[in-house]
Amino acid sequence: MASLTEYKKKRKFDKTPEPGPKKKKSRTGRMFVVQKHRATQLHYDFRLEADGVLKSWAVPKGPSLDPSVKRLAMQVEDHPVDYAKFEGVIPEGEYGGGTVMVWDYGTYEPEETDDVSAALNKGELKFTLNGDKLKGSWVLVRTRDRQWLLLKHRDYYTTNEEVTDLAPVSILTRRTLAEIAEDEGGNIRKASTGDPKKIPRRTGVKRRKKGAKAKVWHSRAG
Ligand code: MN
Image (cartoon, rainbow, N blue to C red; front, top):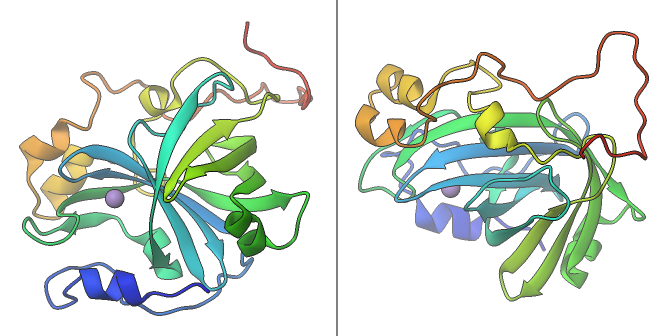
């Protein structure tokens, strides 16, 4: 059963600006968010809404749109649904201390099931993401304990370009990690090590040209 007990135990809510441990449902009940988090190490927190919480995985290298790439995803404690809008700075010395960016945001649809929790308990969930940067079909597969793999299925959105490099900034505010740190009183130098040296002008992923039809079952990648 989804619970925010572990989330609550790990944090001091008089010290961190993170949302409190309250369960709720978003309008769709199927929200997803990816947060870029420069803590001790840079990683991407991948979260799917289910049972009034965000089921969460820390993905060290971030999601990849290349179906031949398996990304390690360590399951972490469930987070509150309100966490999806959290962008800011967790004070140094507190749990997860560092800068947090809302890197992508949207809804998802489970594939081949309506029961997300049951699929996760069995260790495999296929789903379609409707985000700004991440779209199309994906799967999370448990390999052991809290260790999972996050994989892209081959479809229209497949590419071997690194989406984390192409689209490095916040989907909410278009800020880099360093800019978030600067605005919110964080460690700018530390945060900037999570930013690419050159911020590409193109901040989203490739979109199809106006009027072009999506070929959902064909890869565009060579
Ligand atoms: Mn994190």
